[in-house]
Amino acid sequence: MNIQPFTIQLPQADLNDLQERLARTRWPDELPGLGWSRGVPLAYLKELAEYWRTGYDWRKWEAKLNEIPQFTTNIDGQNIHFLHIRSPEPDALPLIITHGWPSSPVEFLKIIGPLTDPRTHGGDPSDAFHVVIPSLPGYGFSTPVRETGWGNLFRVAQAWAELMRRLGYERYAAQGTDVGAGVVGLLAMVDAERVAGIHLTGTAAAMPFGPAVELEGLSEADRARGERFNTFQTDGIGYLHMQATRPQTLAYSLNDSPVGQLAWIVEKFQEWTDPAARLPEDAVDRDQMLTNVSIFWFSGAGASSAHATYEGMQAYREMVARQSAGASADGGQQSGPPTGIAVFAADTTIRSLLDPGHTMEHWSEFNRGGHFPAMEVPNLLVGDVRKFFHTLRTPK
Image (cartoon, rainbow, N blue to C red; front, side, top):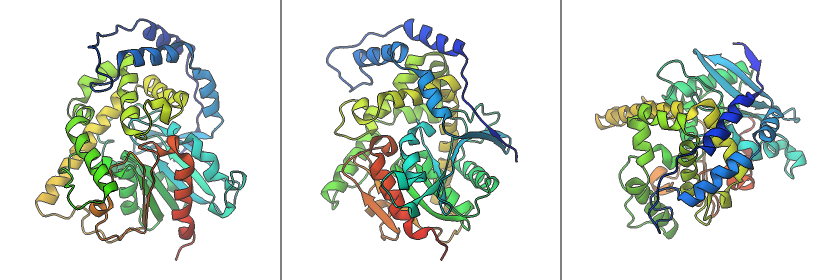
């Protein structure tokens, strides 16, 4: 149960190796006039890779990250890295926040201050949180993974419950996006008595292989989301098939080529961010995005997160098979803690499909932002999290 302080200290040799590899990139040819239709354009990636090599300052961001209290602990044999920021407000509600793929705790840097110290960020001090942000097993500094099974989100949820127990939090809130939304949904089951409520974004990513959305009868906004989801199923799911079926084959490219790792992640920032953004850096801060990519590169998380996807999809298929056989997906689990959903402009979550009975306690829709709201529209996300948990702070 030992919790150790953690400081990021990358050897200079690792930075030199990255710059040398970027300089020696063996670039492919490109057919003219394709834009983003077949992946990341050559000219765009060349410019971004050169900036990563000569303009981006890892040491600056390393120092910035090290200003945030970071720790590691071993849970069930796995090293878990996490940020833990205590609020100056004594009555703050503990909140565990979970990222998805392809991400890390770097995604949430812009919302830490407003969540932990609303008094100095234009908010109500009664809405303060003590914030815990773990790195998923196989991501970032929650590496290396020593055994199979950590892609199972149920196991991750159990680890998060243990983490909050070790930190002394008897009652806490949870927020998650993408894979993190799946973890948080299960956390509400495995630790229902201690979870005050769950707030989710990026929820449609948890059901990528579901049936196509029937567009008839949907509102204009939901029809647009349904069309995006159907397009994603036919044209945007190749990365998931690869990670979910042959992660080891993919691992060699991601672990050996920084440009390969860069393209693998940047494509998703282009496709999944606010539809109004033409390029990834039109939606998110370029250096923050490259810090996320850098952590993948230096930790080797491209390979291990692909294996986590493989195991997660195996568990997903087993769940679907049980449902098809007539078994309950939750083993008869009764209604758990209150649930809040935030849907941003690029999301494909549709309430009539996810919550047909309108039984969820909170549902918000925004015309800006996308899959990385903490990076794209942090004020909207913070406001929605504050609003949802405002009435859940005191046990009823």
